[in-house]
Length: 425
Image (cartoon, rainbow, N blue to C red; front, side, top):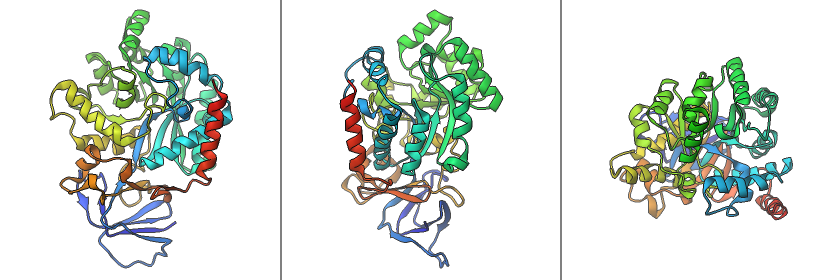
């Protein structure tokens, strides 16, 4: 599909926060041109008058569990361990592989309407996750969910080879090594992950230091924090990072810095489960890369990047009692470019010629976006899902003006999700 966008604004995320008033052309699945109006021999499928609205790289949801949509508002108002052991794990045990497909498709609808063009998804049955994303035209990076109760080292390697095969899924699907957490994964399995990481020179991802209890229990078991323990085993020798990272001590932060690891912060989930508030300001001071994730729809419960961006900045300001920390422009980078690089999506990080056309259109002609004193700060501090006018992935428009183009009627997805939810008690 060839699409010409004109009469609008462009925030490429390449040159700080400079807003361009130029055209953007998409030919096939890639950006062909960004610049002033000029003549072209390209046969356009659509020429879109932006009417002053803004094109931006799509948001990257760098940590989520998409298929947990079936638990939305069914396991609320509980602390993490009770939530996991008494509500989540027993119900997850009832899921069928085909359930993962439909529940993931439901999450994808929400991602699209929130301007999210790719996600970093950790859950069971990765082939079903891949199929749901591919059938929707959505870009997903799947991460291993290995633990003592599900998957194996052999399966993780099989998934790694199969789901990184672009001949089957084009380039919409990829796979990273990962495991659930230190407290659910035996030392033998962790050593197996280290061997795979070394074999393929691949990064490793996991939940890390989400709660104070998790950290203290790890110290009691191993004499070290989760970060130090995993590092001592060689988990981070080929990079990767951690989800949450609310309770990192100085040694932990040094490990993240020295190994060039990325922290993926999940503020909504952390405050809903009363896990704590991450010190984003300290990570920024040390130059540790920070991306943003929603976490799953059972612990959030919304898959909304606007809410996450506001909280990343706002919670840290409250925590430090300093309104100057965590600048909104830094937060916008976390939600777009840093997330892309963390997920290995180096061709989807910014808007420039030759990059894949994963982009969104922000409606600036809404009351919450006026006046246009500072477009990037408006997105972080006053933006909402109502401002997502269009979501394009791989050159295809999958969401526009409240309508979805995902290869199936959305009512069918809602119907299947509700059937699954009624079956699981």
